[in-house]
Amino acid sequence: MKQPGELSGSLPVPLALLRDNQQAFFDMMSAEVGLWSWSKDSGAITILNERMAALLGLPGTQSITLESFFQDVYPEDYHHAWQTFNQAIMGQYEWSFELRLAREDQPLLWLSFQSQAVFNKQGKMVRLLGLAHDITIQREFEEQQARELKVLHFLLEHITSGIFYFNHDWRCTYMDHQAEINFRLSFERVRDRYISEVVQLFHVDGQGTDMGVPSLAQWAIKTQRPSSFELFYVPLQRWLMGHLYPTDSGIILCFIDITRARQTEQALRASEIKFRRLADSNVIGIVVFNVQGGIVEANKMFLDMLGYTHEDVLQGKLGWVTHTPPEYLDADFQAFEQLKETGVFLPYEKEFLTSKGERISVSLAGAALDVGAETSIAYVMDMTQHLELERHRAILMSILGHELRTPLTAISGTLQLVQRRVNSYKHKHDNLPADVERLLRTFSEAIELSIRHTHIQNRLIHDMLDTASLSLDKLKLTMTPCDFSRVITDVADDFQIIYPGQEIILHLPPKEVMVMADPDRLSQVIANYLSNALKYNQPNKPIVIELLASHDEARCMVLDQGPGLSLEDQQHIWLPFMRVKDTKDWSGSGTNLGLGLYICRVLMERQGGSVGVESTPGHGATFWASIPLAREKG
Image 1 (cartoon, rainbow, N blue to C red):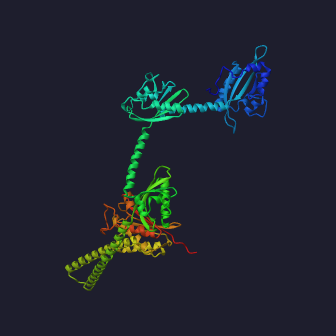
Image 2: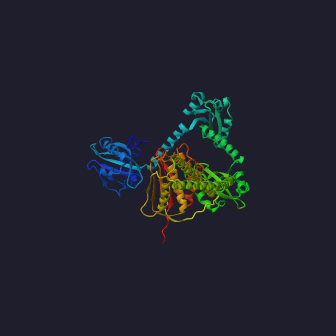
Image 3: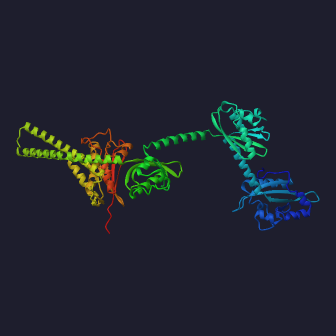
């Protein structure tokens, strides 16, 4: 295939005939060939027919300059086109040249130019007579062939593991380089051998058999349809797929390495067996569903949960949406969005409706079966027994809390009565002996410590009762507009009385920050944050409470200068009975149940708010609680 600007010594059109034969010239004038001439005297190009004008994008026959003649030449061809044309007028009187024209808003046009010199009686060249014809289709076809040939070479070199060709006598006449490498055979060894002999040289499975390939080849020739077979090639420990392609003069035997596909197939089969064992074991409910929420497959465990059968699944009676109570549809939507974005959805809890219309609590998680797949799988665990145990635990905690609070109230009351009497006795007797004074002081300190510990125990009991109420859904909230700044100030004042030596710094807005909340429960959250800050804050370091108000919510932040929290601790501290290990309690308040932050989270969520923590180990922690602002009336 010639490149743009390539000269040729042979002319497809005999220009000499045009020069000497007037009839041939006029025949060419009316043909699909463009005619032009160049005058040595004027240096101009004359467009001799309409076809030439159309090829150059001109309105009709006319004389133009050389610059105009070459103005639309493709930039990569321009220099060589000028150079070649100058060679022609300088003495190379017969030439052939191909170039591309790139006119604005027009597809690329390939033209083939030829010319021959015309001489006067003195033998001097006076002009060039030339023709041009459109070879765009031909060049596009050649380029397409070249691309296809390039792809074919790539396939033969990189995809196939060897190619053999056998003629109509079943003798081998060709073997490619890949076949020589993979089968460890030279072409000289297989040349002119029958197909049965060549295949036996492969030593498949360590034996020299033809594996029935000659019969398959005869069938392919007879039916003119491709045939294929598989073999395990022992020397390379590879699986190969052999394809037999019949041709007019013989048959092609092509091998492709399918080892990876076979390994994947075996792994998939093993995975399917494991999955089927899991599904049939009925340890956990398994359900397969499509993007529309239709349940297309489920194991017995899941069907028993809902009271359905496999026939019900086949009849399309089960659907994700139709068997979900309305209040859980939003959670399902969020899970499906997560599945769409990441390919999985994390565990969450919801309820399904059974065939009897009853509700069953479940915990589930799932994943797409494949990238871009239409179906996904979910693992469903029946939470009924677990929730029942949780309910019994909450009832037990409630009973224990009430039973513990009754004697504790009596103990606390008795201690406070003794404290008042000791203080009264000290006030009535000013001049007591030194040893009696020391005894009363020690006695007062012991009573004060005991009262403080009863407060701690009372707080723990309150946490138990609140947790039980939350679990049993018996916690009542009294929502009313309240000033968040006032709530924070009151809590801080109370703590300042109990801990007069601890500096508490408040950063509050100058105006009221009205929120819709239960003031007592909001105070409980801030008090819990402040209590934790006091517990872990370094001695003699201030604690900061800051309140920020945006256009739609208020956020309270309690900043301490304690040891900080790891990322793992930050994720777990909001769960019930979770405590941070290996942290020093500077306040001396003793053991806690790990319920305070859990109660804070639930209380804020019940009031439409949220909680969080920001911390870096060694640099303290900032606990925050956000709640929507109260809407102004009118």
